[in-house]
Image (cartoon, rainbow, N blue to C red; front, side, top):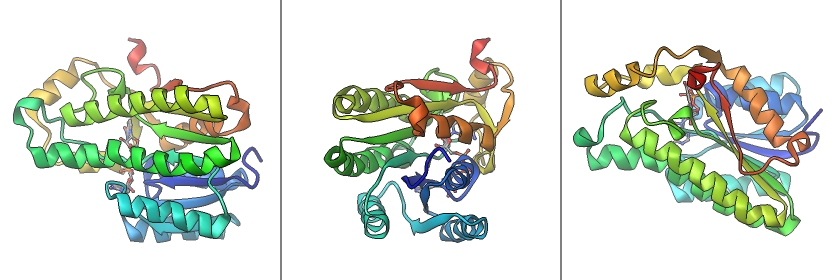
Length: 250
Ligand SMILES: NC(=O)c1ccc[n+]([C@@H]2O[C@H](COP(=O)([O-])OP(=O)(O)OC[C@H]3O[C@@H](n4cnc5c(N)ncnc54)[C@H](O)[C@@H]3O)[C@@H](O)[C@H]2O)c1
């Protein structure tokens, strides 16, 4: 039980890695707040954790909307009194669209979920963690946050931004007992691939040069998140843990 009695919020927990993280954290003793923009998914994951004997609260929230994020934090504090762990996992892909073909609406939608959301949630959670002098944030970034050709312009910019947010927050609030790290997954089998509806040809061609990604499973990323969230990672702050089956080693 690595997370006994810890209160952990997981965003985008209705599917894929977020779901695997929420389920694993509950098994490890955390009180888990399952949050997602998709209400049906929130209900399904909440029920599955309850059935397995876990402590869970489901909260629907669109991470791109500040008021939803504040409500997520408020409902967590109402139910469990605090926030110990925040996992900023919710994210969307972008059909690999390069900058020359991007619309403002597309850019703002991707940045809204992938970067504004983690900023809103971190800002609200930090205020609670500061009072305790303790807390952990885990940001689910991507190898697209480290390299250029692992997504479209908006996705890659949002994930580079998320890694920047991770490092700055770690550097500043590490002084106050708060740890912030990122995971950079490579290819992982989740529902996100179904959102690539009209892949951009030029974007795909550039990604093709990065070679074929080995595919991992959501649970393999959940164990990375568990490590970073647990006290076993007490000396790890501001790090980016690549979990890509060796894709970027080539
Ligand atoms: N699957 C991959 O290959 C891969 C690789 C690297 C990084 N990632 C990142 O991992 C994270 C999780 O992705 P996944 O592959 O598990 O995807 P997924 O599509 O299986 O799950 C993402 C969840 O986020 C939710 N979501 C979408 N927009 C939201 C919003 N505005 N507010 C709240 N929730 C929202 C979705 O409803 C979904 O349940 C994302 O940030 C993604 O960018 C994925």
